[in-house]
Image (cartoon, rainbow, N blue to C red; front, side, top):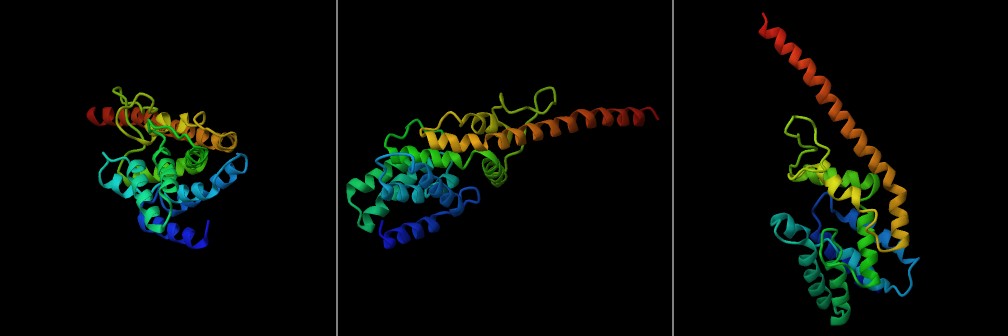
Length: 230
């Protein structure tokens, strides 16, 4: 890729990114991870992959403003139009568009090209392990969602059966289940190396908050009983 093209794409990405959990450093980590994964794959067009990695989250602002929108779909069209203006051919701009459109974990549109699969894996890699926990907590705080919910009996839910959003629900719904979703051998290998950090954090946090509720509620009930008996 020409340096002028890289700089133009990078600058456009920077203009579009204003989400703390999906900031430009997330984009760079995805790009760097993709470069690592690409070394183990054949037939990769690195120009397509680089552009797709840089542009994969440029639709985040639109989705944040209107949650009904899909940032992957919005971003794919923005990327396509931008690359055409930059002078890319329609065929190559479409290939980048397809990569961006299919990178989302919850999408019903799976990646098909090797570049799209690498982008998908590298993006998922950045939500695995400790970095995935940190980014998820960042995002949950940004949108005002709690760490956990309570069951009907007042105990702290582990998130598995929750219908309302929380960090624990996101862990059980997404973070815990992404490790068998990778398309490339290298992507899965990298993610597995990070897995234990995420598991240990979730289990420790769940144990700590449940212990606080169990012990604290019992002690509080004793205080209330004593007070009422005066």
